[in-house]
Length: 235
Image 1 (cartoon, rainbow, N blue to C red):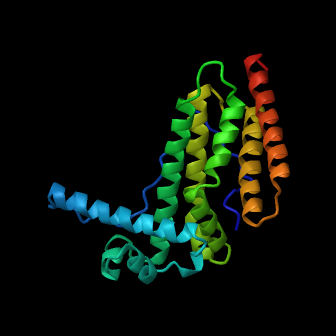
Image 2 (image 1 turned 30 degrees about the vertical axis):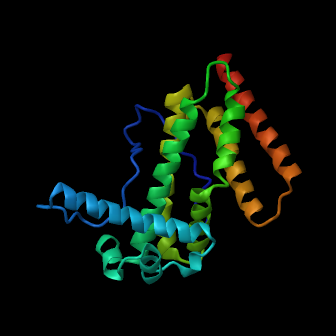
Image 3 (image 1 turned 180 degrees about the vertical axis):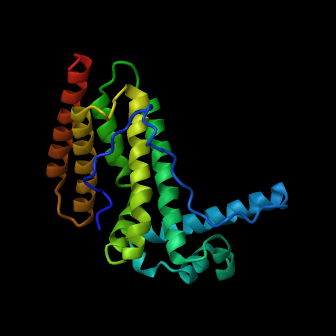
């Protein structure tokens, strides 16, 4: 299963069919009547479970991920894990949503740091590539590989990825005016996005040399620069 689908998503603010909110995968709330302190404690426990799962995944141990293993990793009881996530599928879907939300937050922060006159293509490609070698994406890669042999996970992960991609495109639209109703913009964005993520998988398997990576990053930047220049010229 490849979560990085070839399906194109058209994004624009006035499109009523688009819901860019990333769903928070969790069980029905049990906080009715709970005090703020109890709610905060429960949320901290939930986060602890999610982070323990990310740690396990980023180490390349997706085959070891189970409710029991994560409970031990988080140093809590199995019942405490299942209070928040009844099944392994529910936990892993929540981890995907958790990682996606953090990656989007980082993307927004990266865009906010781009100064006037700075090379937009250079900055976007370099920061994105850097993040693809970090903890969250390494964990995400493991989840994608895990879902290849698990149709139930495939079904759960796919809509979460589409929501993530939609919000990614919408963030870019708001930041520098790229409308993904524009076919050329969409094409350039998808080439850059999938090329970098594909290289991250190739690098994970030791298939890419540093020279090839540098060459492909430069090529990706040239694609984005051409699209940016065309848009600025009113093309």
